Image (cartoon, rainbow, N blue to C red; front, side):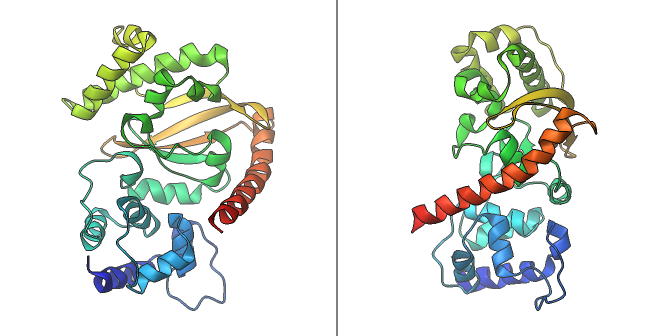
Length: 290
């Protein structure tokens, strides 16, 4: 690892990002050309002290997850992201997978601007890569796991707890849609071992999946009407929209409800309740670290 080079690169990229590029307000008292250190730390989910140590060249080797989070926070392109991994002496991820995936800058830029509606970027295998606070308040944060279990589709057919997100009577619909979507992804990726392994394991572990897979239904999930079970607000009826990256490996999902509907009113409440919950969660986390 080369701490001085890593520190210099981080600072140069921080200076380049404008606050409005990442959905932050531009105040009149800014003394730096780009983001402040604490803003980068916030966007990356790190403590301000830890990021400051990195930028001063005093920190130990950051993990691959931290490097990936910094690449997203600083809006690095593919070459810059790879360079950051090299500077940190971490292997460059060869393919988008789990929390180490490099989110497409175009999708990330759009996500930054979706501040009043739940939105998140997922992989084509339904791994949550990054989400805004409203999405976390609506559907929860993804579990800190790697491998097939990072996929919501995998958990849907192997973990009954994952199905609590939707009402019981809607489960058959979601099962069919998930399998048809995975069929389309498998065809698009070709002989991809990651998809092949997931399909093989799911066929063994879930009779429902195996039966649906053998129907050979194929359809990418572009839009859908969903009823989401929220622990405080109850069942929320929403429309889910998808925007695909150019290579089809990532999707920006966002949730809306027609004006004047109960779902729209519930989203308004979610923006208040969700913020309060996040603040309480942050307080608990700070207490646990103390």
